[in-house]
Length: 256
Image (cartoon, rainbow, N blue to C red; front, side, top):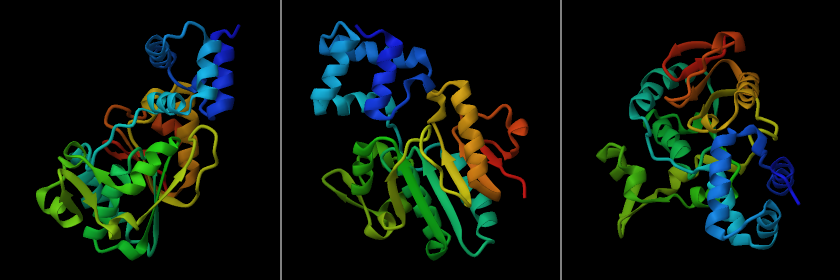
């Protein structure tokens, strides 16, 4: 019979999601919740369900990856990105941006809107990744409810979206600015020569050790002078030791 450590190892092989890198209390709660809902008593039963029931497998991955997002989430930080960070970065002829853990696409599409407002669509490449392939398919459709777009100023909402039957459809031009792909932050290689990495409300679910490894990989992936933007509840306390500067709240810069 599987014990919990062996169950985590088996899940890692099956899903390529390493549960040991997530905070154990949160993972335990989500796993036990699903076991109760599905009427399972052992980890062997749980693993068998994941292997044989595609719908429950999708539900499990969704439960682990916590997909919550909206356009211009934490709008004050986004306006700092728009008015202060992006003009600095656009002094270069071409820049590369990566939304890591992009969920349903609201974050990278928000960047695409900012890029268009700055008249820089032809100078910016936007990459967006998530471990959850189901949510990536939703991101590529770019259809949202009101809760996802409620933080957008009305002029931007009407400019970039079409409202049909209380759903908001992002225009094709904005959709075309973002390249989505499946990516595991803990296991996969990172892109390089990036000028801006946005990873918000993702690392809060990871252990301190996993966070430290991610921040080191982010720093390496950035070009000199590039920025890492994190969520408001996840400041990098040891940013100096890692090699970052901290010019603005939630923004960490790789020195030139």
